[in-house]
Amino acid sequence: MKVRHPGRTVLAAAALASLLTSAAAAPAAAATGAAAKVAVVTGTAKTGSTPLNMRRSPSAGAERVGSVANGGTVWILCQAAAQQITGTVRTTNLWDHLANGSWVSDAYVVRPSTGIPRCAAAETPAETPVERAPAIPKKLAGESWRLPVGASLVSGFRTTARPSHDGVDLSAARNTPIVAAAAGTVIRVVCNVSAGSCDVDGNRTLSGCGWYAEVQHIGGIVTRYCHMVRRPSVTVGQAVAKGQQIGYVGTSGSSSGPHLHFEVHVNAAPATHANAVDPIAFYRSRGLALG
Image (cartoon, rainbow, N blue to C red; front, top):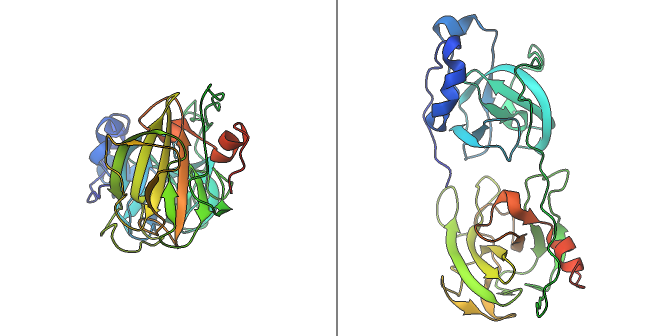
C-alpha cells in the first residue's frame, strides 16, 4: 500500500547527499537557506489520487525512497534521460532530479517547458538499473499448464507505452470464472488498492491490483491473478488443481473495465517486479498460445 507523506522543508545543500538515507519519509519540498542558492525549478505532481514515488535512481525499478502527494510541489535541480514512462502528463524518458537527492519521472510533473538544465554526469547515477526480465525456465517433466481464462489479449508485457506492466491483460466479461493455470498452492489472497475498497469497481486514478490471488507451482513459479470482482474463492495454504476455479473476473483496483491481469514470476516467491517474465513467452515455451 502506498503511503502519503506531507511536504517537508529541504535541508541545506551540503546535507543533500545524506538526506537519501532518511528519504523514505521525506518528500520534495521548498528549498530554503543555503539550498535556495541552488538553481531550482518548481513543478507540481499530477498523478490522479495517488502519491508520486521518489526513487533512488531514475528507474521505476529503483528503490522507493519517499513520495510526493498528488498536487504537491517538487523542486527540480536538473533532468536526465533514462527509462521511458507513460504518465498522466506526458510520455517521456526524462527524470527529474529533486533537491532532496531523489528522482521522479517527469511523466507525472507539471512544470515550465524551459529553464530546466540537464544533469551533469556527476549528478546522474553511474549505473541506472536496466529493466530486464529473467530467463524463462525450461518446462519440467510432468509440468502441465492451461490458460487462466478464455479471453483475448488487450495489453502486453512491459510495452513501450507501459514499461512497468508486469503481466498481460486478458479481456473477459465480469464474473467470468478464473482458474488456476497449473497445480499448486495458494500463497496470497489480497485486497490491493490505494484508496477505498476492492468490493467496488475501480478506476485508473487508483493504484493497485484490486482483489488478487497468487499460486505457487513446482519449479519456483508463481502466477498472479488480479482485479477480481470479489474476494478470491480460495484461501492461503489451499492446494489447487490445474483448472480449479480461484475467482471471477472483475475490475477492482487500478482498472478501466473488467479483465484479468495475469502475471508469471520465476525463481520462487515472493513475486516481484524483478522476477516477472512475459506470460506470452512463458506459455509459448510450453506449447501454448496465450490470448
